[in-house]
Length: 203
Length: 205
Image 1 (cartoon, one colour):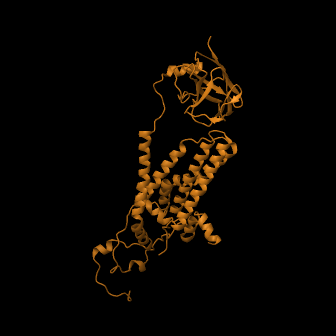
Image 2 (image 1 turned 180 degrees about the vertical axis):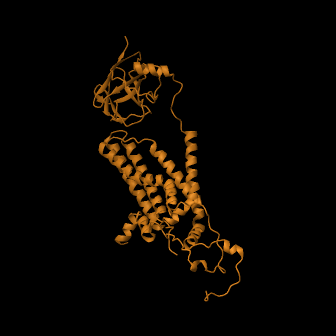
Image 3 (image 1 turned 90 degrees about the vertical axis):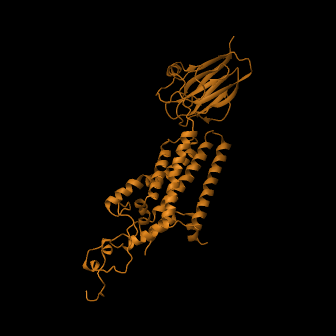
């Protein structure tokens, strides 16, 4: 105590505030330097999220067609043929339904040589592959089934074969629509097996 | 450029280790000041009085409760950012080996959104921002791993779309495209971080 020089009595406001430690001073200096860039970066990140969410709500259309009656969907799942269900409809979105593997004969009145077919996934996208054959010859390499329909041009008098290439679970459930008779067929094919569609003119 | 410099250039992840090596995992651990006579009698007369930054909670892992707060905020983003790049490498290899596209669930997007939100929150508020001064490795870690996650997700997207149709030419083209994208973006990342290294916010006085 004897070494200390004499100072006048300290005013109150000096005593009440405790001094900062070296660490706190260091942080304060860093804080003054890095406050702005950090806050700008944080606002950018949160703004990016908010912007992407608004874009998601404004511009992304969910192709959930609510105009189709549930009874029509039920009937289509039972019969596996329908005239009222358009291309790209996701029939198995909510139901846990396994379709039967069937072969169909497609009878039509189309007098042209060729017509279109559309193939799409009626369930959720899970990476199933099919390949389409016409009279034993492949139309295209194997492709993944997606909700966006894949379109092919096929002859009107032929045997169409849909072969399952890669299966995830419960078989490969797909929808196929023929423009010649404007009917959609819902079918299930196992890996390595195939469904056939016999296209023929009605008499 | 010698070998060490080249490794520093090619692997910017070196900066995480470097900052941890310089300052430790927790920089400048604050010691509890003993209330001894020596400190109590210290004279503050000529010192400027510095008002403390904030007197509330600090999420910087100094005490146990602070550490729990740190984990609550940064636990999920750190877990997500570290695991997802390796998962996407696994997915890319699986696509390449099986020859079929691997469809991921939408939960990855949710994880990205959630972790970006939490990291943004940790940047904005002062009590949570303190963790970047306390843990100098945290900022390079977040930047490097999130950029890696972005690069690998894009390359996974490219190779996946390539395998939507199983055609040899198409898959070969997309695989080449993917590897080119991977190499180019890694090179750009390396050049960027070699010219402008990430600032370590730790440090000694």
